[in-house]
Length: 617
Image (cartoon, rainbow, N blue to C red):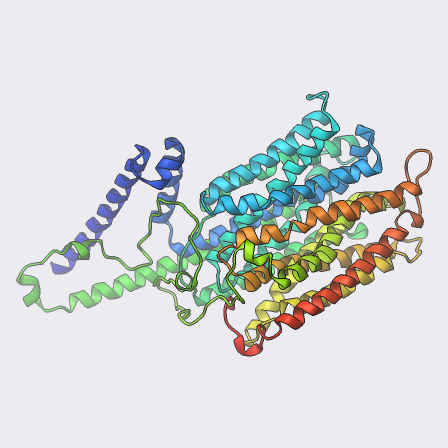
């Protein structure tokens, strides 16, 4: 009898919690003194609070945590819209009747949007993640959408300055989605942030391949229609995915379990297979075996493949919880009947008390949490075997804001290393359409190749970090950057080798794609280790300001060199079109390598193997 009463009390306690939470939601909807209700429209507040409440009540935390990771994979896979520019740049140049310098300025405009990327970091400190996502993707809808309407003739009399502004707006939208993805990963997987960032970020390297697969299915032949299709997809796809995954991309506090190691390995395998499939579809001989439709369906299936992982983790959690409740009931049955017959004392704390894994927290402020050691070690119990995290923290050299960071020598070394490494690679990709045309090669195949190898480049640091950390070592990320800058510089000089088969063009493109992708993946944890996690959203967006600066300087110089070699039709063919440009880019890359060596020397004590702690699995 006692057992039945206790189970009944626990059930009614849960109903009481739900009722209480529902009451709070209703209060927010009517505009009580709640930060969310005071800040956002009532109907938006109620809608998203109800969605978060429903998820918290029905799903275990570990399921929501890993579902957010899958959602970020989908976001990143369609967020590299700027990588589509080379695929339609030549057609855009023809349709708008603009010069090569003007075309390079449009490529710069897309990167110039990153000058205001810090706005997304500031917004993430005050707005909920779903709203930051919607705002960012809406900017892309406007930026790419109006350009699309202009190309199809629905919008007329659009000046070059207006197109420049739209391209900048579209480029800025990428920063908003990236900021949300990075912040959620760092907070949901603080001890595995490098691995999680590398896995999810690698999918952004596949964006060009994914968009190309879709365009190949719809418009396999017409260059004009393909250019329009790229712009249309770039405008609507990010917003569509953001609306779908917005409710699940949020911070979930949970404890790390042994099952997470298995889950990461499974996602790593799926990611590797996805990259291999993408590369296979980029190779001429292999791609001929797959129809465009088969390639697109295969890519969609691989993007959906990680979805069963959070479902499996959630099911395992529920099984563990049910087993724990069964043990609890059996222990209750062994209680002496004397205490049962003496009456049941009902304490309100007993009614609503549940295991931390069953309970949930409703945060109505929706402000971004301040990251510190105490929060990162916050845990909850579950039916899984837990891994102790009480003595593990994220290792950082110092916790500083942007004003102090700008006075640090390490920042400026890091800034110019990124400028002469990643940014140079991005400028190369922006000019890939013209480079391919000058060599008589297909721009789409080179863009797809760079995208596929960039995918693996972003993945490599995660794989290395995962296996090295298991040996209790801490990787020196500046040393890793040095090792990647050397082949990047060499690849630019290899482009000077005359080859009728364009073999060195493909090898260099693949090399630059791998190395640029890897440094991009390393940059996120490197920023947190050098300057801390509290102000990461702003600090990292200030760092990537070098991208528009480098895009303008390096792209403008390339356009000047190209213009000197053009024929009467305004086009250039042959090795001389970019010869001097490649020499300059290669030299700058080796200068960046020297700066990376200095940064490594200044930080090598921090990466001492004895300090193997922080975000390690």
